[in-house]
Image (cartoon, rainbow, N blue to C red; front, side):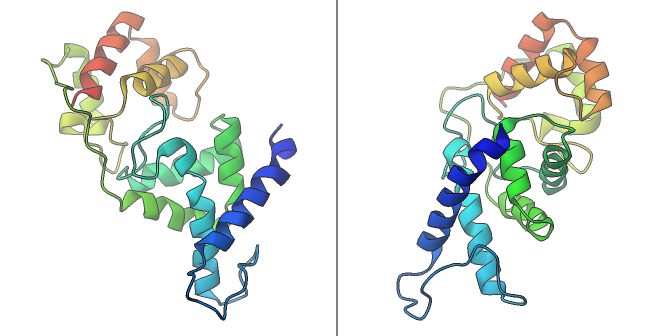
Length: 205
């Protein structure tokens, strides 16, 4: 199914690439689909155009368009890089993200992860308030660090939406998401009710 969508979405990327060219750069008439060897400016314009597509789900300001999409602005770079590689290899399943990851060349994946990692994490919505942490959250802090702000070992969870968190936990527990064996085991050992409580607490941090 990915291949069926590729020509349409690729044409969007090419169009966005053209829009990414500065209007005052009269000497530049178009952005090629592939950068000329050694031309960092072209390479940057092409990658920038590709990453504009990410705004469709993840938001142009870092706030996702839907609660089910994760915040990626300010997320750990090593985590973002791993997920891109997992989407490319098929270790993590998502039709849209598999297309997006495979649309990036090997030389673009690292800069793409770095680009989003350097952005500021979006502030949680007004009115979200953290309650007392449920006891089961302690197991998360082993990897996700104190206050679940993430680190080298694991991504930031604090402030992600309840909808994304509870669905990610469910997919790990159900064996639908398989790109982290430890997370699968942990989530399988936690009841659905406790996972829901955890997701509500973490989303309010």
